[in-house]
Length: 143
Image (tube, rainbow, N blue to C red):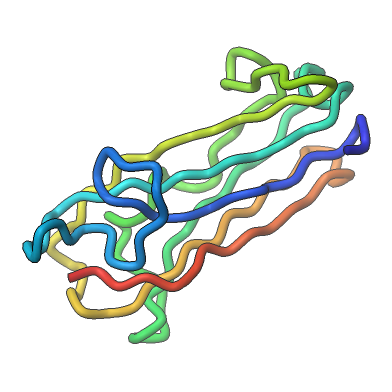
């Protein structure tokens, strides 16, 4: 990858404690639970990944069925999350590049309508606007 670039490579939901994508992540053994995981993998080039450069990370949930923003309990943090390309922010060397893998524990709040279809969108915007990337998860349902 370009030494001065960054991109998302994965954004998906999984069952609580799992690393496998699941289109009904809060269901296990026929029982609807109250938790699931959101996983995000980001890659950066060898120069940018350890540069300390600042960026904003946004991750938001959307209720596709209702056509509105999802209940705030589904968002992993209040966006934006101000971060830097460095080890202190979980960037790890991988060959000539850097990777960051994050797992967010999501607790389904009382305001979430079960049976609706949802989708996540993540956006990375460098403070100098030179690096921007967007990714969306596949659709999923909360039971």
